[in-house]
Amino acid sequence: MSTKRDNLKRVIVDFKKLTPEILSLLVEKYPDGYDDENIITFKNANNEIVEAVEVTTNDTKYLVKVSTKLQVTMENYDEDDYEDFDDDDPEAVQDPEMGEEDPEMGEEMEVE
Image (tube, rainbow, N blue to C red; front, side, top):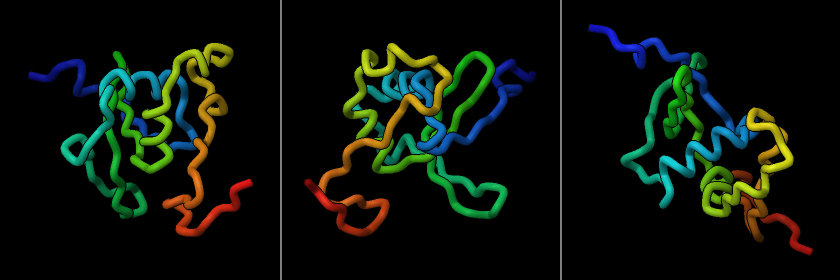
């Protein structure tokens, strides 16, 4: 027997496309952050391995790519930071301050 959940639209979300709504869902589902047990690994259309965490709305299953930026943004989440933005505005979620070294870039950044 098929359920409504089987017919959900599936969307892969990169940090650059993260909206306040999806970020809020992530923080609600993973209030202490996510760990290896929560990460889903799959191959995308380009046959690249992708690691993501899942959140679901009534009609959509979001697979949000894991990254250091996502982890830091979730840790520092404050819904008041997004009150002036629409829930679906990908410009609202900004890159976090990563400190002296950005692990995703693999190089040191200048700190003023």
